[in-house]
Picture 1 (cartoon, one colour):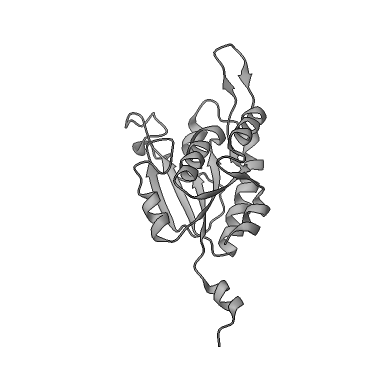
Picture 2 (picture 1 turned 90 degrees about the vertical axis):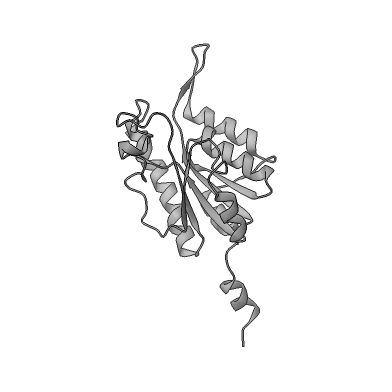
Length: 197
C-alpha cells in the first residue's frame, strides 16, 4: 500500500534550477576577476549538489552572440561556450542555447518547463543584473514562481557614464530591490532548496 508521504516523495518535482550562462566565455573577458570566483563557485556548487540530491531537474542555459569568430569568446567557434571549469558534476535535465538576455526568448525553455510541470524556478548564474534578472522578470510575468538566489549569481563592476563605477555589491543590492516582492523571492541556497517541491 502506498502512503501519502511515499506518493509525495515519488511525485515528479515541480521546481527546477535554472543555471544561466555559467560558462568559460567570461574567463576570456577583460573584466573577469579570478579572485571573486571561489565564493560564487562554492555557493553555486552547494545549490547544484543540493538540487541533485533532491532529484530536482537542473537546466543549463548557455549564451552565444556576436560574430562567429575565434576571438569572440561568446561565439560557438571559440570553444568557450561551455560550462565553467570547477562546477559540480551533476546530472543536467536539459540544456538550452540562448542569444538574448532572457533564457525564455527563442530557446524552447518555456515549452520544456510547461511539459514537465515546473511551477517554481530557482535562478542562479551570470550576470546578476543582466541575464539572471531579465530571465527572472520574464519568468514571473509568464506565471512561474521564482526564487532568486543572489549568492549563487555573479557579476562584475560596471562603469556609469558619469564616471562612477558601480560595484558588485551595489549591483546585487539593486537587483534584489528591483526583484523582491514583485518578480521573485530573494533567498539563500538553503532556503531555495527547502522550498523546492
